[in-house]
Length: 380
Image 1 (cartoon, helix red, strand yellow):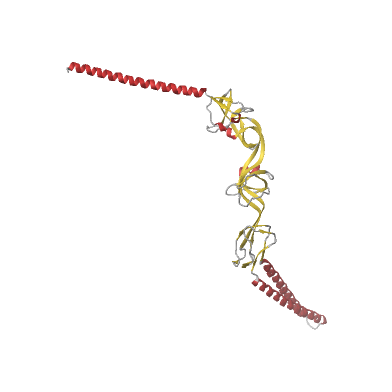
Image 2 (cartoon, rainbow, N blue to C red):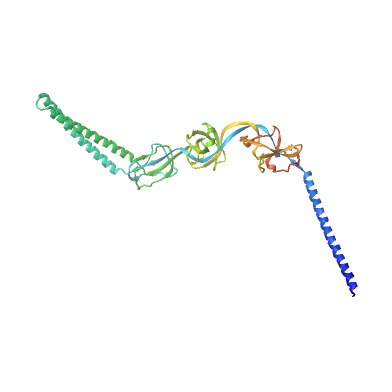
C-alpha cells in the first residue's frame, strides 16, 4: 500500500470519528431537550391539576367563646390520712389488721404490753396513800398546836412550824396524785386506737416487736374523699380562683372526673417557683390514692375570631394558614392569640382574617400556593 493510499485511509477514518462524535453529541442534546420538555409538561400538569376538597377538609373563621384552660397533673391523695404511732415503749400485741382492712374511728387496732406501766401505776397509788396519811398526821398536829396557842401554852412559832409541815404534806400528796394521773395516761396509751375511719394502707410493725415511743404501727387513709395537688406556674397563679372546675383523666379510668379548686397555697415554692392548688374530686368508684391524673382547669373564657389549632401551620418563620380564594390556595400570615376549647376542640384566636374566611384544615397537609381546588358535593 502506497503512502498516498494510507494518507487517504487516515483521512476517512478521522472523518468517520468526527461524524460519530457529532452524532453522539446531537443525540445527547436531543435527549436533554426531551427530558426538559417532559419535566416542563409534568410541572404544567401539576399546576393545572385540581385538588378536590370535601367539607371536612375545610374550616371557617368564626366568632367563638373560647374557654381558657390551664393544664394540671399530679397524683391523687386522700384528704384524711393518719399514721398510728406508739405513745409508750413496749412489746406490740394484738395487731391483727392487714392492708385493705376497714377500721372505724375509735376502734382498738393494737396494744402495747402494759405490765410495767400497770406496776408503776400501783406503785404511784401506794405512794399517794402514804402521802395522804402524812397529810392527816400533819393536819392533826396543826389542829392541836392551834388549840394550845389559843390557850397560851405554846408560842406562835410552834404553830407556824406545824402549818409549814401541813403545807408540805399536802403538796407531796398533790404531787403523788398528779403522778397517778400521768401513769394512768400511759396505761391508756398502751391501747392504740384508730383516729379516723378508713382503710389500712400499710402495716409497719409486727406482733412481738419491741417498739419505741413514736414507733410507726399503721398507716390509715380515707379514700372516700380524694384530692389532686396540682403544681402551676407562678405566672398563672393570678388566674386561679376557688370553685373553678377541672376535668381530669385518671389512669385506669375511661370516663373523665370533675374536680373543684378548694384551696390555693398562699406561698410560692422556693425551688420550682410554682404555686400549689388543691382540687377536690367528685366521689367516684374505683379511685385510689396514688393514681396519676391529668387534665385541664377552666380559668375563664373570651370571645374572639378563632380557628382549630391544627389549621395553623408553623413551618415558616411566621405562622400562616392556607385559605381558599377564587378556588386557589393562598398562604396568609396570621397573628395568634390565646388558645381555648370550644365543644371539646382546641381552638386558637387569630388576627388578620375576616369572619367567614374558608381555611384548609390541618389534616390536608401543606399545599403549594396557587394550587387549584374545588369543593366536592356533600353526600346526601
